[in-house]
Image (tube, rainbow, N blue to C red; front, side, top):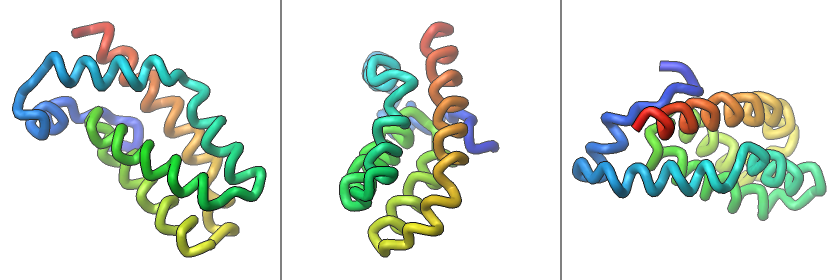
Length: 115
């Protein structure tokens, strides 16, 4: 599995098979938009590493609910690094986070359209 893959079976299992709830979660991510990641990264770029940690934590959770487990793991890594104030390490992975989010978002949108 790659960082942009969506494991909808795992997500649905975690939601006890509630397909309507899963679609609602996908709807929320789609409504947040493709630019959500830019807003989150902007907190880091502006030196607000605490807010970045909070936002990437929320992203971690929502992506896990969608079934984007590898991306969620990347978010967790960056959350922990930011909480440890490891700014250089976070900075070195910001573009990977952004690009992975774009791929995940596009995959979520495609999945939603196929449901």
